[in-house]
Image: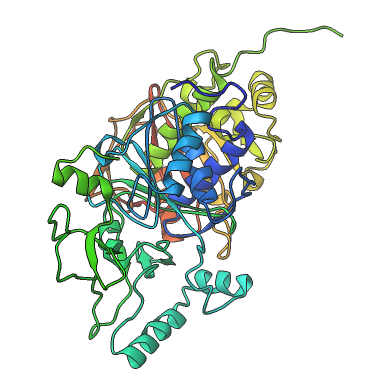
Length: 281
Length: 198
């Protein structure tokens, strides 16, 4: 694929890339800490992954193979448009197969297939601050992180238990990284949280509107917050995937008619296609 | 006024060169203690090492202040850095965002460099340190983020003093500096998150 000659490689100018690259290196050195960066306006609206796109653009090289997923799927609008964006501006090879990708940009899922040490996972993040809905002032949350003052988050989880009998947070479930910073893993289902713990691949997080970059280096401890008497648990289903029969994957509920018909299928389309022998997508 | 053309070139391919160098440095900081191959800039003025020059040119620009340690604080290197990066050169190591030094000569005290603040630990210095090689000298044992279990690392250029300071650097986490060791053909990362045992 040749790239449009009117763009610098991967759209961003070199000074912007350097600024983002410096932020990424700080993020890797301080796992879970949100590094402020001078987020640029991108040719797509906030909320469409501008943070992830800027991180990917700064990391990407000619020999990378890029995969983009949106809620696990390679063929939904957000994934298709970002993949095309990098085909056009960087001319890099793209793939839908998790195993073939060197850089994977994701919106709200971690692939089912275990990631390797030679891969980089880039998350799109809407609200990077895990304490934001508990404390709206940035000056306060920054001090709370500085002092490791995280009691408020445990109170929030405790209120879940007192109201619902269990921790009702199901996505963007807060984690503690390397026993120091509390971090928002982006709105991935809590089903995916255990995959972050000691993952072999480097994980980078970009929040465009909120202008923050953070990271989890390979093999880093990622602990989902919980209580001794209410340990962290992931979602479970009574069904298997209706297409490939998988019993270990994250399932989406699909409404099939207006008479209560429904089916459960894998959210990770590449994983599902591989298992069912389909060549689609 | 005379024009001199003794200025050495930077990357052959500025966009690719900077990207490849950044990826090597990123890999190095993500996996502390592992030498990551990096093709440097051979034409950089001595005593600047090729990988040290590549790291500097890929990360520095007008937004980052830089301190050149004594053996590098010479006119040819200053002009090289000034021309290719535009980074303001400062005379106090404690004020710099980036410190470029050679391990075997006049190394600045790691603990005197900018370590960030509790609210902004990222407002800290990065030390780009040229060394002559890895695998010699007394090994240290590294552990922490980026390391699956523990990892042995050694370099004959790094003194006991350096390791003492590097250990102290880690104890003030999340404050501290990050070190990128630039060897003849590879780079090694020692971020502040890495715990060091002798």
